[in-house]
Amino acid sequence: MKRILITGGAGFIGSFLCERLLNDGNNVICLDNFYTGSKDNIRHLIDNKRFEIVRHDVISDYAAEVDQIYNLACPASPIHYQQDPINTIKTSILGIINMIGLARRCKATILQASTSEVYGDPNIHPQTESYWGNVNPIGIRSCYDEGKRCAETIMMDYHRKINLNIRIARIFNTYGPRMALNDGRVTSNFIIQALKNEPITIYGTGDQTRAFCYISDMVDGLIKLMNTDKNYVYPLNLGNPQEIKIIDLAKLIIKLTNSNSEIIFMDLPQDDPVKRNPDITLANELLDWKPNINLEQGLELTIDYFAKIINKD
Ligand code: NAD
Ligand code: UDP
Picture 1: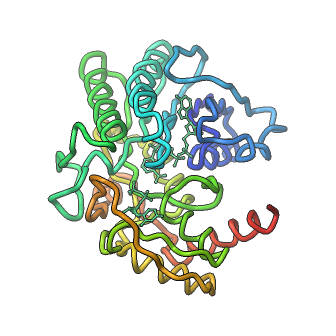
Picture 2: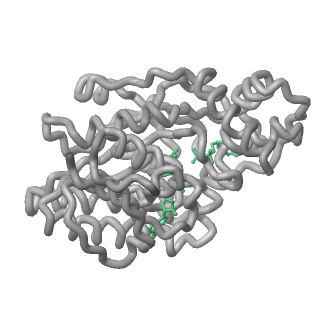
């Protein structure tokens, strides 16, 4: 049994991580400032004696006795991280500095939730960990991309200087139940629009691609990375390499929901990456990990969830 801190534990990925680590018999502290997360995501865990919720902002220092830290605190959806960009970059940079301080004091292993956004609008496809990326440092996505890149730098420097035990997960687009209704990311937007028979909003032509990983596969990957006995400290891609054009995602969701929604085209946001797909060879070799849930299966599970939520409203 370990004592595990999950920052951003009331968010989409964090809440599933809390649940899984509790089910595995650990003590879990869920730390969150509820900026994009919600108590609803963790309400079902509250009665568990091994579970604790702390309202706290990672921009400030935090003390506890823990063996492992998953640092997930950060708004992840473009509309939310762009809403208060200064807060976003502070969350990434001051957040990782504070959590590293805690990891040092406790001699804990710390895993940073990094992102495929560190590759920016990539010139290498699919993206391998050795690619340094193509990121605009002064654009509207930079508060997130550069914050996450800098957090990786800080992690590696602490590792080299004091041998801090680190893990860096470069998470690619992940989706599933418990994404907030107002999250704004593409899978939840399209599913909600389709279920309500409202227009499906495609930004740009829809020819841009992404590759979507179902939440349970991502949680498996994160836990395997944290606990690998191979002591791997470099960034590792985690994602599902099933690449799809956004227009085809819209058509698939319309089909799966049996929706009457029309497709409408809107302006493409600045610096929206043209293509993205993880090369997960390394994760497969190192962790013996690959996703088990294909896009259609994952979408069906997510559609079931949103259908229930929308009917309740
Ligand atoms: P989310 O927005 O649902 O969760 C983020 C959580 O962090 C929320 O509960 C929010 O309230 C909390 N938070 C934000 N700022 C905070 C702060 N300053 N102090 C404390 N808590 C704070 O997003 P998610 O999809 O669950 O993402 C979790 C992590 O994974 C993020 O770090 C994100 O960058 C990373 N990630 C996610 C994806 C994805 O596709 N879901 C892809 C790449 C990386
Ligand atoms: N997107 C879209 N319609 C939406 C939301 C997003 O066409 O309602 C597009 C967006 O422009 C991007 C892709 O879908 O090309 C994925 O967007 P998301 O915000 O989910 O993630 P990210 O851009 O960070 O990969």
